[in-house]
Image (cartoon, rainbow, N blue to C red; front, side, top):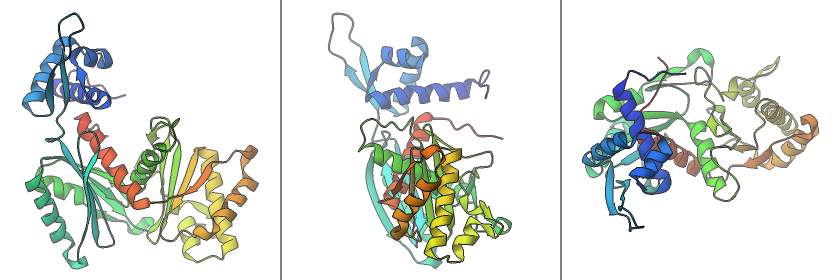
Length: 345
């Protein structure tokens, strides 16, 4: 457990985050409602609300209608002054979304660029966004293991490359940057999009594994009881390195173009392992090289070997790009509203 006592500036940021989270969840809130939901003293809440108004983080909506006593002032997030920029780069394209403090996407586009002009295009893109909007935080989806402002990527453990895109952008623009693994973002995005269709699902309790099959490798985003599973070194979900047999790991076996029968055997084995260890409600599969024509055979094979006939619901991802951007946007907005990032040193 991280001890925050004796650190007034950190506690102030934590309390600000709690206040903004209550206002976000309720849509608007009074001083009394914030005190009740956060447990912060009324005096402290009043002081922090005044500062948040001065900083244009929130706005005063005026007085509530009278219910017989003194009318209470109501506050809401300042949606026009608290925007986040979220994006990921794929196939010579920058896919981005601008979202307000409630996480609602107000603009979403794709920008094409030449491979040789990647950094120039990226810098120009951010420059134009910052000139037009007040950006409080930038979230970037990356394919690899995240380490603060950097990430490591590669198909083999002994030749991973370190890429410092987060550090570069944060130093250049003096705006906080959050890096998130692409599969984690996809898992969150899928969950958010899927629960809109299911009334009794809640993002805070959902259990999902999102597996992506691409030419760059096989990985998974894992959510257990509403929490992203990152692992000690942010290595959780790197399924490509999972040893499958004496012949090699998952990445090696799939890269050797196995026949359909062998492919079904390999993929169903991975799913059953995940089912036994994590027991998710849903296992979602997608990606450019997934053999979607074999999904029924994969399901049948999983049912045959399922322990005690317990097996996750296996689904195909309908729109991985949408899930990806939605996930980055959600995670970035949550961090923007929390006001503090606690990291391991």
